[in-house]
Length: 407
Image 1 (cartoon, rainbow, N blue to C red):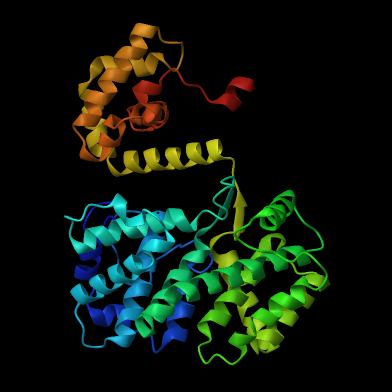
Image 2: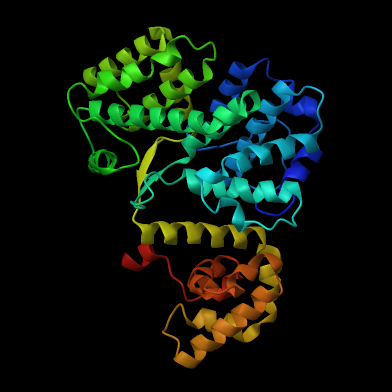
């Protein structure tokens, strides 16, 4: 299954029956714990929920995130509609996102109305990854990880109960989560330059009204009193997990940070045990999969574009390496010129030949047609950068081991 290609949702539903996707979880709480163990709640999905293999492809973090988001929405649908069909599930999720259209102007105009429901949903989920990854629309240098995508799941659950209240519910919960993370950042006694930047962006944003006075924290906590009596613990667990994640960068918690989280526990009507569970789960995931998990990350727009583009090109090459290698080996002059480019600067005419012949190669492989689109040639230098690893050793015969050369 390839979550970056059309019809991946239908493929996913064909690989697993309902029992595979629903039966392992006794209730919402057990599903949330399993989802957290995949890294989805932390914004760094390292696996999908189903234990059965999804295929031979090594999936990216973004692809795993899409699968987990769809699975979480799918689970919520069947919690309310035990005897429904998969077609009804897809249409229901589509209706939910359509209900949020006014909140995201022009969101659905990107997609053709002639597409099947499943493909339309695939486009929407891909777009949601991008939408959820931006914190403040006017300050695009500041990015969130995919942690906020669980808001979609909670909002969809609310939509299944009361569609009319969903928009207000989503906005209220989003504000509560982000404001909670802001005050958690503020409570850190040792702040990085990125912490300080994010605090400044929050304070100057008109989208999220932050009270920077001494009574700001108390006012915020008072605004969460409605959660204290809530029978559904998902919202409270999610808020606590993200606040715990916000202080996790330095892998320790000082007294002031702990004091704020203690206040949050009282507001949520949670015991100290719940905080310890949250921290233990985060610590376990961190040590098992990655040393550094961040709710917030900083990236300059140009560097972010290059990083994402490089990752995309590398993924395309890896997944098409066999066919790409065959096509390159048949393009003798291109291979020679690429080899020459590693030891000398190519002339303008030679560069033009490399560009034209690379585009010809890309035409023969459907997945590489991205390079033929307007602006796609900007990515050609990245393609050239990764190609040498595919070619025979004779292509790199002029390369030397840098460390040996320095001896």
